[in-house]
Image (tube, rainbow, N blue to C red):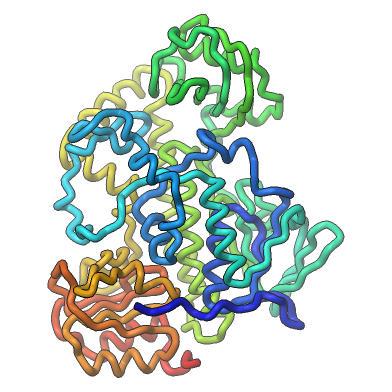
Length: 519
């Protein structure tokens, strides 16, 4: 198994840092680690003085990781450092056992383990990672920060970016009384992104239909509320743990946008109206509000400035796909930006970030809008709910929804005839027990040769440090002869037969740049 690349020192050169990242949330920290892994100097600026926050602690800070996020973390050796999922094997495990165990939902309508047909996912192997697991936001950020700093990235907290200027050669970033120079700037600074606003990115989309509330309260008479997720005609309320209440009030987002403080009296009034009870909240400990506003930057790049995560797209947290979408952005962008900085990126490589990730973000926004549409108060939405519930109780329906929620259906249009091209590489386990996740930890691309073809080894050598050659047999035989894997773990090209050299050469040059990229 290959060992990780040597860690760089992230001290700026005379011309400044290679990359300045605004925002030390999971997306910014993951991206910082990806860049530092490829020997880029990185500075992360974060407005908050401390990474800790009440809203990042249990139960507020619990998030669901989908299959793509779990694979990404495993491919960088990070998944093993997370602990919460070892106690909560599935986000819905408490809702039953066996075939009727709830493993996800769409607009609060559950789908169950026994209704999913895994045979429709032929590239999910026995050695594949889980399809969905829980993580704690604070724990995830700690793991990602530790990795980024170990690799040499600098993280400055209590120093948020306030403005920047861009030239043809780089950016100058202002953070309070400080100024920093960099070749590139990436905004990972959330839904109210300073980078996006200062950079003049168009942020198109739709306005909200509801104000959502996430609260920790004391309830004097909790027996008046039904447990779990409830969809009465007046909105939605969820009581998943004692004192943990989530609400959706279809007020057009008016309360959230009003800027008014969230008081005990207000939450009690909303809860009473939605639940149709006279329940009493005796104390309000913590509360945050959110909406289903759905907006997306029309491009993720302006010159030397890029966006990722919530800075690039916002939507309601229904289905918990925001974190996964952002981690996917970071995994896709990191290697492409690093190759650009190091001068061996083929033409158009960095532009492929928007080309590939924008449609994925657009689908998630529409997925969120569709859920809101069938959660609205009124008979039309109730009718749609009944139809969707029937679909979710079918094998094909549950499999389709699970594939979308877990990210298994994600596909980049990379060309080629093979059905694996553009999809996440299966987590092959080789005869010596090594897995694909382990082989990808140094952040390089890979040429997999299942037939020990000497010409493939010679071709891989043309790309030097960028492309490692791996030959061997795997425990699960999918009939592949060879596959070209990008550093983010997506299949750029694959063949079931002895490949034509020119075809593979073109695919490799498209993503790795050819001889010009040799170190």
